[in-house]
Image (cartoon, rainbow, N blue to C red; front, side):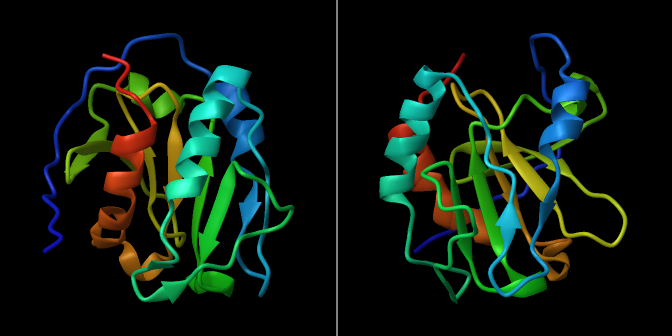
Length: 164
């Protein structure tokens, strides 16, 4: 049985803010049938964790079949189509929001995620306390539901080591 626990808290994050890099990396669109997104450009060490994660990702998430975005990359993955797609990017820069003591976080099956929500878009979650930042963007119907993150817990735990 898969479960998740939604726990809001103020996480402690270390390191410098990377707001400019974050703004450059956020540009992604999931409105096309075959989504096109910005592929992250992590260090080779981080990319190795992402390649390992890519091999462990499930074929289905939240009853959506795997449909990877373009351009094809071991650093990205997707499930579903159009505005209803779930998109994963591995090796993204550290979000500037992690420096905010009021930032919200959730824990899902042993993996901590920073929660970011803005406007009409769905929530974006980014792993915390890991050697690679994994970002998952959910459709807006998941604005109050972290359930799809349960599909990523075991692969993240198995392939992306703790940074603490």
